[in-house]
Image (cartoon, rainbow, N blue to C red; front, side, top):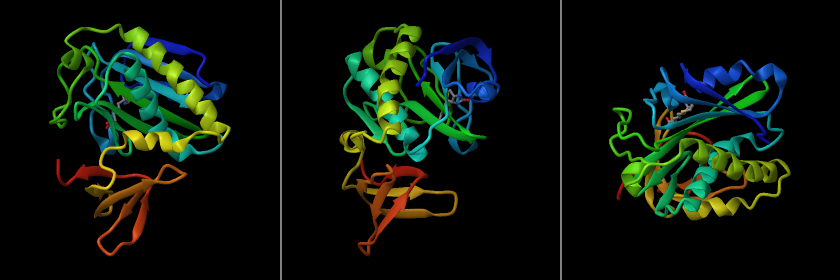
Length: 231
Ligand code: BTN
């Protein structure tokens, strides 16, 4: 449960700053107004100018570690719904799409006995990482600017009860299914080793993606990137 937010003006990456707090074994959030070397998944950069939200949650989960990226995505979605946004989808495992464009990216890294869950959300910024061809921000979508600190507090307020539920094993996992993009549709799951094609079948109790391949076999994925084959 996150009870404290430590705020910075500029850091290299909140993911690295969070590591410095690990000894205290206290679950907290590290945020920064901008990052010099924001990290995305698969070694990509996360362009982090002022106007975006950059936060890393330092967590010491006892169980269901694999579910944390999806849980963070669900918290982002619930927070955005409270701000009047709809047309929100999770592109498994952890991108949040608004109007079918990426508005938030999530990276979870294990470090010693902790999980550091980094969330980037495009709020008032309108320039994005070059590799994001389809991206948007809250300002672009709503035509108004937002209070980044209020969004951060609200996000933590949504994350905490979900995380508590997850750790006490009582979460209604299937809630996330409502938001998963492409159930029943043809996709590719790209892992570091190969590309798998199939249709999205389900999300299981560990929140792994279940893919049905051409032969009808169901394969489970805990990580990878999803590409839709048809829009
Ligand atoms: C992705 O979509 O590839 C994940 C992007 C994660 C970006 C966030 S911003 C806060 C935290 N600090 C980082 O350096 N990265 C994450």
